[in-house]
Each structure stands twice: as C-alpha cells, then as structure tokens.
Length: 155
Image 1 (cartoon, rainbow, N blue to C red):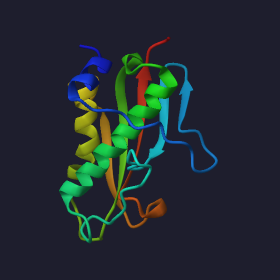
Image 2 (tube, helix red, strand yellow):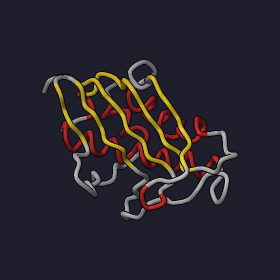
Image 3 (cartoon, rainbow, N blue to C red):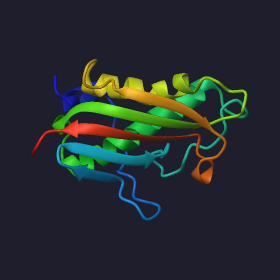
C-alpha cells in the first residue's frame, strides 16, 4: 500500500503546509534527500499548541502536539513533492520538547510523530534514527519542535 493510500485509510486530512515564520525554507531538497526545518504543532485553524511538559501539559497532550507537528511536516512534504509516495524512507528525526527540568519522558512525547510516520510510511521506511531532547524554551512557547530528513525518489 502506498503512503498516500495509508494516509487516506487513516482518515486524516492534512492541514495547509505551514509558511516560514523567518528567514529559512520549510524544506530543502538536495539530491535525493529532503531536509525539513523544525516544524511546530500548527493546528488546522492556524493556532499553535503551547505549553510546557511537566508543568501544564502531560505526556498524552505532548504526544498529540507531536502528532499534530507530524501532520504539518507531511503537509510540507506533500506540497513540495506532489505526493507522499515519493518518500523512500525517513532517515532521521529530531524532536525537541519544551519541558521542566524534572520531566524525563521526551521520547514518549515524540512518539506522537514517530508513530504517525510509521503508520504512513510503513514499519521499515517510516522508522528512523531519532533523538528526543528536552529544552526550556521554544519559539512562541510551542510544546514541541521537530525536524526530519527523508530519502526521496526522483519525480
């Protein structure tokens, strides 16, 4: 089953691809690699999920923020590539979690994005090398920021 078919089977509608909020490109294609800049949890109504894990958000809320971020990343890929079927595999995922010093469940939060990508691209192609790190601050007070590297096929 293709990535586009899997996404449809999940019953998920992608939000509009987010626009850059600074001097950067949301995605850069270099050869057969697609580098996605850090994306945040942008909801369909263009609002952001804000908060700090361990203070005013629990793991479940963080997981949903990471999943929402993953949807925005898929929207960026689809807008640039024309189809998610051009993705050969997810290579690397880096997730930053805005959290308190005592919060230690960053990997469980970033699973929201990782599990979405596994559902869309499959067990092998959708699971990558990954880091999940805590941080005390993210732009606009967003709960998570995630960047990724994908291997893609030619058009």
